[in-house]
Structures are given as C-alpha cells and as structure tokens.
Length: 178
Image (tube, rainbow, N blue to C red; front, top):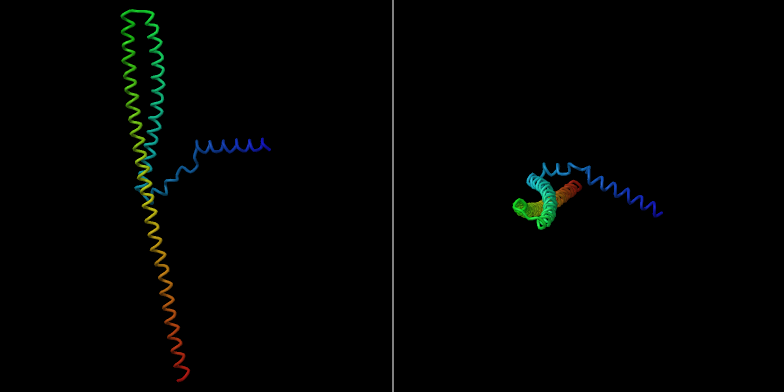
C-alpha cells in the first residue's frame, strides 16, 4: 500500500516536472491580445523583462563563480609570491589585483542592473493588477446596468398586458348589454 502511494507520488511529481518543462497551454494570452491590447502588451513586456532578468541572473551567478575562482587563485598566488620575491611576480600580482577590482566593479554594476529590472517587473505587475481591477469594475457596472434594463422590460410588458386585459373586459361588458 505504501509502495503504491509512493509510486503514484513519483508519477505525479514526474508529470508535474514535465509540465513545467513543456507547458501545454502556451497560447493562453492570445485571447487577451484581441480583448485587452494594453494588458496584453504589459504582459509581453513583463515576460521579456523576466527572460532578461533570468539571463542576467545567470550571467551574474557565472561571473560570481569566476570572481570566486579568481580570488582563490589570487590568494594562492599571493602565498606563493610571499615565498618568492621579484619584480616580475610583484607586477603580475598587481595586474591580478587590478583585474579583481574590475571584476568586483562589474559584479556590483550587474547586481544594480538586476535590481532595476526586478523593480520594473514589479511595477508592470502592479499596473497589470490595477488594470485587471479596473476591468472587473467596468464589467460589474455593465452587468448591473444590463440586468436593470432586463428587469425593466418585463415590468413594461406586464403593464401593457394589464391594460390590454382591461380594454378587453370593457369591450365584453359593452357587448353583453348591447
């Protein structure tokens, strides 16, 4: 029994991971494209920014790994150079230090750029939420007006029916005595 549940859970996890890798509903925004162009464009911007953000994040992590490797190499070389002394070694060490400073500066710039992209994505998501709420309010108002109009029509028809019945009753009364 436990083995069967474990097997079912493994199958479910595999299915969900496959679904994440290859989503079936890739055209879910097409309906939005024809109905609400502004929101669709914002979603497209968010998706492109998210792709860029992911690429930049990967780039930053790769650079970070490179920097860590360079720092380790720098420390090793520094230890080796401490045992040796010479103008060539000092010059190389100076170059490595300069290179390391440049890499750190690049990393800081990339982190700042990453934060900027994250802020943009957040702003676009907020704007989409606002537009969504506004769209819901407009739909609600439309349906309220529509239902009020639909309720008004049967009342008018009922009044016309009552008047017609009264006229027929009046005509029958005159025909019966005449």
